[in-house]
Length: 215
Image 1: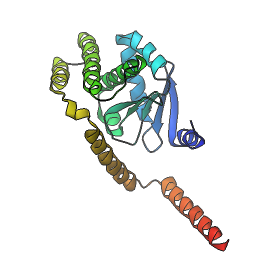
Image 2: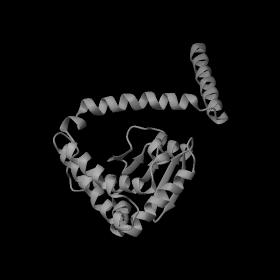
Image 3: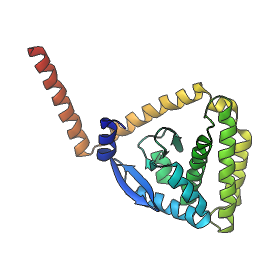
């Protein structure tokens, strides 16, 4: 990890750890989201403890809530991190957050098997990951932490997946929309330190330009 990335992680994220799993939330978001992640992990530990061991082993970067809303959640192969979109982290039930963690952990398992997330593999991998959600959801059903309708919805989602949902064109469109959403969201923030950061950054750049011009 480069110096810039290290500084970003240290400065822009509130950190915690739960059940031996690293948790981080962007500083522009409420640190209460850490509690929601902890609750989701507790539910997983109570329902299927082996998944917690898989998370520790396959997600060394842990769970991170970003200001992005690129997707509900996604697995970063290079960083070994399960990311959550801020909207999903804020509004999903604890059971739904647990299902997202199970889904992304399945992605990490598949990657660990050496199966690349590319081409026609993508559709098969997504069906497998939703299948892992269904298996876990059925266990939650016996604990009355979820209703049958949610399992039916997952089964329908798996059956209706198409290869075109995961082609490069779809991913690029998702990325463009996320960049716009993120920019608008940041633009609405009025926290003093963010405005101050922009002012100081601008002054620094102007000084650099003046110094360059003098030379």
